[in-house]
View (cartoon, rainbow, N blue to C red):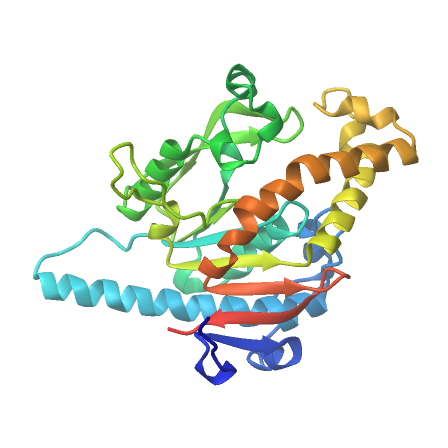
Length: 316
């Protein structure tokens, strides 16, 4: 085993207070009402979290965007011929179910869009690239929805490659969380300045092709990546708490795929949530999601109250 001192680590680790100092002079661009709108079920996002965690992160990303543009133009000059207009700066955002990655993605989208250098920010979740429930049932893997094999990985890779090629218009499939299925509709994107791709497995490495040759991963086309992390014990607790809240809200809608859970007692709901976590979400986190954490450029580590306690940044 190779030991490595912290001084020789390829990462910089900053406690929350030190990270917040990096943007201490930044002006808070959001209101409490805006934060409330972005907050996910069961999360504790507030203005302090935005100021101390996400403003430094957006400043770092904005710096990376500017440097990426400069490199793009330098490459254009080197080649001696004009290149397409600036292609999107793509951010991959990964993490477990219930860890808060969707809230993080929405927050980054809104904060980054306030910079005039990159005002067009689009967010796409990989949920839209899940295979239809009917196809998952045909393959006998509906119970493994969210695992890598439940996605149309070729379509997702084509989408990201089209975005990175500078296509003027790209389309992303739409997912309906109420019916727990893809809708068949498409969302059109007009060459954004920044594209955020959020999902469980977006940092997964490439699979080998049928002939054994290496394939491509969507993360090969990311310019920056973020992993939202927490202890599995805390995530399990958040998942169960969220399930109980959804039982009283979204699941209560008769059109909900999970409407059958709305009539469960508290004890029954906790038992069912524990079963779903232990048999589906925890195995997926352990086998497919947490294993990609080391591939991220930046890790946000949360404490038990959902606040970020430290940040780990990969050195260039």
